[in-house]
Image (cartoon, rainbow, N blue to C red):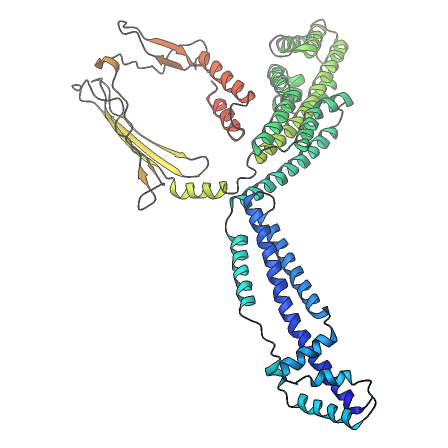
Length: 549
């Protein structure tokens, strides 16, 4: 092979690399456009149906774009073109008048002056060509235009708000919250299994509602409200099975026993322990009571205290043991009295153990209740922001004034402060009343205005005034004043006033403690039936606890 032809081949390879580089650039842009187009299609589907989260769609879009670019680069660089076709294209684009094609066709020809002259002419023609001008690494306007348009479209699809993205994010949050609650319920079940001195049957009975709730949460796709209801039902059942109410009654009974036994110096330490709730110490003091040193009078005094405790405070086996101890002490049998007190100590120790177990189970039920509240709040990311907005804008104020209809009634004024439960806004209100003894048609309630931060220049607007009508028929009615020194059976009953008949001069008074139980029971039934939202059940319970007479 002649030196001249080797030079032609080297120049041809240089031109071939430039053509391949230009093709790679074109196909890289095409691959990008293809990836952007597929990513736009994915984003459109994700915005129409709640399939993927916004972050997931963005990551997939980036992966698709990267894959399109990689495929475009690989295809552009590795794509093979027929050598004969490439040489003819170079002859045409460089204006070589078929010199390059002819030189390669004469590659195997015998050396001659004609061949040498053709090759030299081809080299001269290649040297005279401006390759950068004839083979520029430029692309047309179409590819960049399509690339920019698809990029803008994809950015809008990926970053513009979408209800489907919000739905998927909320569902993921709910699913994560439910998984967390499942974990918490499992931990609560493990805590119950670790409670000492529980039998296997008791453990199975206590963990059964938790395990049932876990199965329901795992087997079904539940809404936050449904998941909260499942957990809350398990918590209520666990609370009932804990027996904490009966234990509290027994503990209260033991405190009363301690009050009765405090009258005798012999059992003073045991009595103090019972009154303070230290049942273990009380059991130890009762079991170690030494009655041998007591004389007959002291034994009689002890017997009287034990009788009072067994009759008025103690129940069950404890009452029987205290009664037996009293009988033995009254008969002068100190050893029998000590044995009976030891039996009473066993009863107190059993109550102490049961109280510890009930307290542990009640704590587990409280944790389950907290899990129910957390599940109910899942999927509500804007709740905190709404509460903050209410805290800053929901200050309320009200003023009211009215004229009393009873001429002998004196004016009064009062102020009250209330804090909103959710928003945190604080409102104040004041009212005053006066009487001149002549105006018998004055309204029972004056004007009230409530400002709430929902409109207006300062984010506030006033509700319509609240009006309370006058007495039906325009009559005076009967004013009832409840005296503070009313004599009742318990000394602290509260009487509720009811309306009297039109033609009657008498007033009906109902003891407050007689009607409270009906309302409290109705509220408890509503909570058990699920009529009260989970987040408000604690508020309702606390409300009636505070009102309890």
